[in-house]
Each structure stands twice: as C-alpha cells, then as structure tokens.
Image (tube, rainbow, N blue to C red; front, side, top):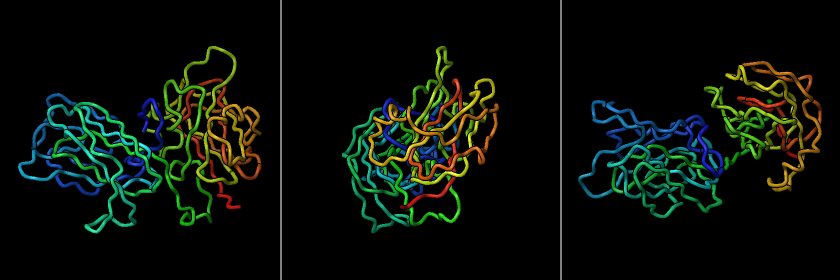
Length: 330
C-alpha cells in the first residue's frame, strides 16, 4: 500500500494486507489469482519458469479455445464505497486481455449464482504493460468485486480505491480500539511533505515492513517542523497514543506532538490552515530510533476528538500512529 498515484482516490479496499481475498477464478492456469492482490508492485523475472510456463507476477488464465470469458471474484478487505479502480497489466505484453468490465455486489456471504452483480464500469479497453485508472460513479457500499476479462489473459494487479464503510453497531465498543486505524475508517488528509514515504501508510494494519512503509519527509533545511493531518474513523475520546519509528534509525524525528480538533462540518481543504490553532492532545515528547512509544499519562483529557495534527520536530520518519479510545456516539 505504499504505492501511490498522483491523485489520491482512497484506501485500496482490495489490499491483501487489509484482508482482501481472491475467492474464485474461472481459470488461473498460468498465474494464481492471489498474486493479483499483493500490495507491492508487480515484477518481471527474466528466465523464471514453473511447471505451467513463464512465471508471471499476477493472475493469468490459459488461452481460451471456446466461447466465453474469464473472471475473478474478490472479497474486499473492508466494505466501502468505490471511487476508482486500477487495472494494472504491467509486464503483460503479448498476453494481456484486450478489455475488462468490473461488477460489484454487497453480500454478507460468498457470492453465488443468485448474487445480484452491479456493473460499476463500462467495458474498458486495455493495453499491455500499463496501469488503467477507471473512475467509478457510485455511492453504494460493496463487499465484493468481480473482474471480467475478455476473453482471457493476465492482470498484474487490481486496486479498488474507496472509503471504508464501518458498521459501528457491529463493533465491540466495550474495549478501547484504534480509532485512527484504516480498517475503522481513519484516513490521512494533508501533509506538508511526504518526499520519501506516503502519509497514507501511517494507519495501515500491522507492523511496517521496512523504512519505505511509513511516512518520511525530506531533510529540513529551514526553520519549522513537518506535520500531517488525519481524521479518525469515528469521533471518540483518546486515552493512549502509540507512535512507532520502526526501521527509522538515523532519520527518526527528535520529538513529536499532537494537536486535535472536534469538528464535523469543515471541508478537508480548509483543515491545514485551521490546524494552526488546534489545541494540544499530546504535548511534545522525545522519540527514539526504531522504537514503539506508548503514551498514556501524557495524553490530555480533552473529550471528543475527530481530527489530529501530528507534528514531528524537525523532520524524519514515522512508521505507524495508533489512537486508542472509545467512540463517542452523542
């Protein structure tokens, strides 16, 4: 999920790390369907073959010798509204599908013959060795997508970008949870710098994989500090904060501080300027290299929180941020 395009379309709901699964393919003779959901970009390995032919990093069906087309059904890691798709055929040149169409559904069980699939794209012409960004105009919530390729061939990666939709009535709120977690709808909104690592990595599930799997700014050569603004998945009261600098050893920030806001009706575009005046949630705290920092006593009791501004001094890298608390429903 560290991969990013020039425009942010939302969370990759089809991320393997989020729990997305390729649950059925009409055919995956040459390359298994599961590879299509891997988070890292596809690679090409010259001279690598397996029992069925050339090893390819993606999903690839055999050459069709009859009527019909191939398809793959993917269960999203979290349900959500879909804003855009990336149908990525990189490294597939003479074996990519000429066209594709994507359908989606909402189902609490695995889709079957009676599932009502909704077309969320037109038939899209594909090219080889290329990413295809397809915009989706729908406000519906989906749990599964069905990638149809015509008639056969290979797709390196499928990304399904959107906003998670959380059924908070089904969440166990008897214990504290990470209200900033991506799986709970948390999201990064704005930052002054993300030269080496994306702000959208900060609330990914699990531990970071390496230094590139966090948020890292360039070396600051002028006064000031770097910052990122994030929205909680649900308003809540924060009792503890975890800041991780895993893998950041010679480039971790000297310290950090967190400001907060309790707002419901301001557009995202206005938050950077507004955040200059937000109050403290976590006063300035020293950080260590390659470490997990848990702050409890230092966290101020401020009541309802909807947004935070994480400030790092003066620059550097953070791998993960967790805000633990209970959601507020009033």
